[in-house]
Structures are given as structure tokens and as C-alpha cells.
Length: 124
Image 1 (cartoon, helix red, strand yellow):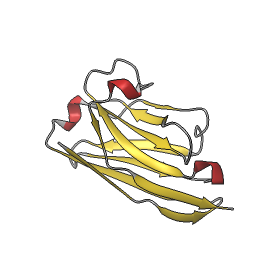
Image 2 (cartoon, helix red, strand yellow):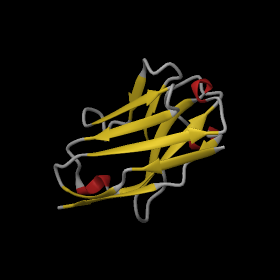
Image 3 (cartoon, one colour):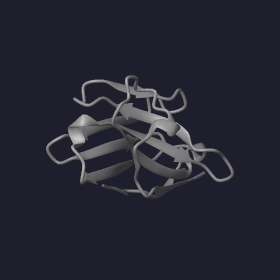
Image 4 (cartoon, one colour):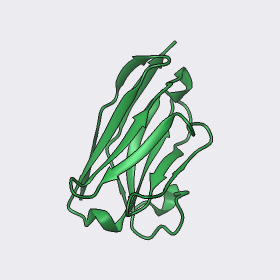
């Protein structure tokens, strides 16, 4: 199984980025997909999740209204569109796959597969 994240980079505050995570080696539609992030010196935290069919989403309070998660079950890819980026959004972003999730508030401990991380830096 491989989750290949991409799309990170350096952006000014107020800017936008779109992260992608391409999955292979698993039955993608059977997994709730999510994004976590880890800022320097901090623990990894939940950001967003999308259900198996793509019709329901859930966000942490810190990104609600600015980020949008979506998925394409034909291309086996999950996306995170980020708008209104703030310096506090600077982190390494990880995509995650959870086979047995019954809630969209994903637990880090229950994740089956992680992507390798893509770094987002927001300058002020």
C-alpha cells in the first residue's frame, strides 16, 4: 500500500494550495480518508476527513470554512484545497486511510496507512 502526497510548498499568508494524495495497493473506496498535520514542535493533529462515498466531510475547528477535502474514487485520490492560509497552518501534512472508521473524527491511533507527508510553509 502506498499513499503518495504532493502539492506542498511555500505560500504567502492569505494564499491557497491544493494537496493531493494518490493511493495504490488498497481498495480505496473502502477507506475513510483524511488529512492530519504536524507543526514544528507540536503533536500531529487531525485536519479533515471525507467518508467512503465522498458525500460527507468533517473538519477541525481551526480549518473549518477555509479548507475543503474531497476524493475521487475512480482516480483513487484525495484532495485538500486550502484557502486563506495563515502562518499557523505551517506544518507537514499527512494523508491517512482508515478502514474501520465509524466517525469522520479520525483517531491517529486507528489509522491503517499514512502518506509520507508534504510540507506547507506559510510566510507572513
